[in-house]
Image 1 (cartoon, rainbow, N blue to C red):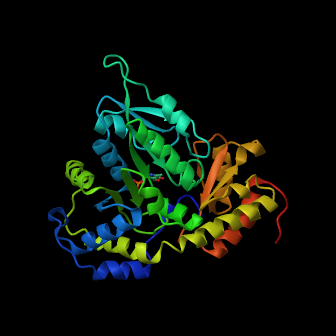
Image 2: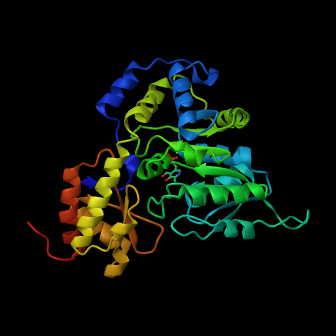
Image 3: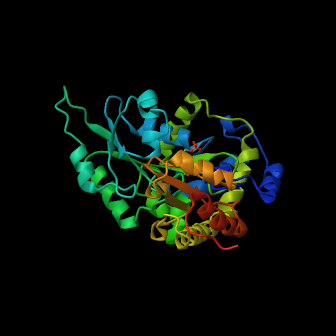
Length: 348
Ligand SMILES: Cc1ncc(COP(=O)(O)O)c(C=O)c1O
């Protein structure tokens, strides 16, 4: 099976496993694990902040950010298909007492005007005001799309100007950085807090970081404990993170190149994809345009040996490239998917 379902499917490489086996460890909860401390220091610089906190998952990082930035009984403003909105089980309400206001996005981006219009001045009695804005880069459900830096900075400035704190869900921020050839910190530094996930394209078995000011990270460590995320000899997995930040960032360009090749190959063979819309490691396939239900298309693809996943967009599936997807996998998928979907005769 050529597994293009998600970049979360990456498995630690032999070299990463070796780094893990060699890791020096200590009690992470007491901040005595040297490998975790090294990872946090490195990640803080990578994300453009004073300090970073190591966490088991990006979901926990996002939820801790909302807990420390948000004010209970106020609103969280977020693009309507962001991970925080549709895939964290209502965590903003559950953990932090935030009411979520979802705004329609264009390729996962929202505008300053939308943010301004969504924030209501409270009358102190009936009307809830907002306390947090959360942005996502790259944007998962929009198809791995990137926030251009100037547009991002302008929206953050608007939000700050009307009194909001800003969180960036940068689970795949490294993909955006590599695709545009700018440091991740160029987005990160504008925000109060930033999440980075290690277990997607960066190839770690688990782990995420939340970065921000020393004061915010002091509060994040309190919430980390409250969420049950304070660990013990976590250096054994943090070593994978140190390895990934050193070896697996620049190589994301290979995943992006493979996604482009996949999209072009499919496009040439009549699969409904738009190669122009491939910005990072995602390829969106509009099987609805073939008059096919997503489930049927997925089953037909799987029968030919190619695994994709559905997206929230009607009729659209996605294929992701990552560390464990080779050039050969891409070439085979280019041949197999058109046959599975019954489009255009294929060579061979
Ligand atoms: C944009 C985004 N943020 C956060 C997460 C959460 O990551 P995890 O499942 O590791 O908690 C994901 C996972 O797919 C994601 O795509």
